[in-house]
Amino acid sequence: MTYNLRSRKRIRCSTPGIEISPQQEAARTVRTSLPSLPIELLLEIFSYWPSIPISWPDSPALFPNIYLERTRTLQALTQTCTSLRAILLPLAWQNLEACSCRNLPPGRPTSSLAGKYGNEVMTELLRQAEIVTTRNPTLAIYVQTVSVTLTKIHATQVFEEFARCLSLLPNVKTLQIFGLGFEGAETKLSRAFASVILPSVRVLAVPREGVALFSSVPNIRDITFFAHSHAYHTEYCARSVARYFPHIERLRFRGSLAATSLDRLTHKLPELRELGPIGLDYYVPMSRHRGIVPSTSLECLSRLERIRVLYLIINGYGGGGTQDLSLYHEHIRLVKEILRQAPAQRQELKKVVVRCPGSTRVYIGKGVESLEEAVDNNPSME
Image (cartoon, rainbow, N blue to C red; front, side, top):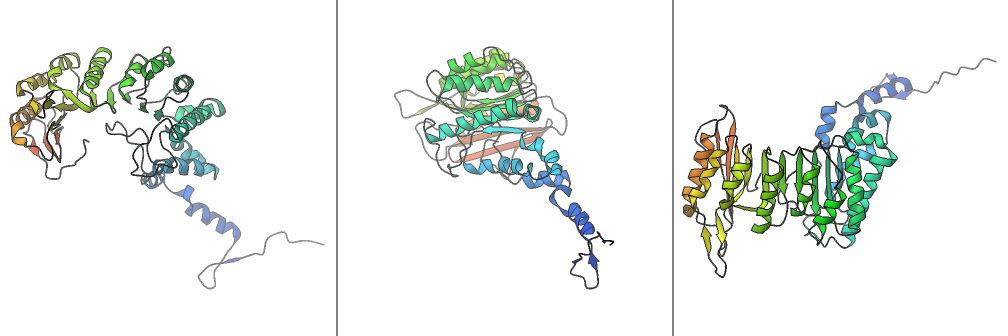
């Protein structure tokens, strides 16, 4: 007896009189499914999930749970089929992030890092470090950005494991460390990284204690400091940068850099392209008033021939509300003129951002043109 092994099953489509075989339906599914989308379209889709900001001075120590969604989704999709795995695996492990908490909703102030949130980010850091260095070392080449929150919980052991993990990631370009801020943090960090060199890192964003890493990242070109807005901490960070990184191009702070320290800084860091914020006023001890720095202290900025972006800040010590910018007219005029005179290509953009309580003003120009106030100001420092 002869059997017909060909399936007689037919799948009817919405058009009368036309039948589609299972093989045709499978082929059509492949052409119209998620893996068939162009990589550019997939990237556009994933861009709608928020990402941990890079080098943002006002970054919190912990990020809310919404920042976990992109990585979770990417890693889940890599497990669905071979096609998606090949496309999305590098994206899923491009960022190693242990700075968000599942139960921390958006808008909630950062809680103590010594409690359950600190334990959560510590556990997540150790989990991801184990995956990319022990369970599946082939993932290590994909990691380009590392953003982690470090706490005092088991600090010595965690810092050492973190340093070991970083030493095994050959392509990391950006390193961000949030948190720290506890007694002995700088010492523990220095010991953990004593024998570690990370030559691929170009962008570093850290709290004040992060200066302990400077000898481990010799090729840094971009540094941002989080937290610690006290003037002493800012000066300490600036001195450390000048000592270790004479070729740095971008230097940003959460606090304000004293204008009186600019003379030394502009001598030591001649290749700066972006700097700030520079404080135009200062706190007068035992007084409810503020002092205004002399505009002449800003003249040394003219040494920075490559400068393109300068941030100025009026702290408004002892005052409140919007400050009277007329008091700083000469400061702003001088900085705009210095930036205008800096050698530049005709279409090269230059920018001065002036931030004070209640408002932000942005001045923009190209080449050696005068800088004019932008119509739509962005209230952020970026």
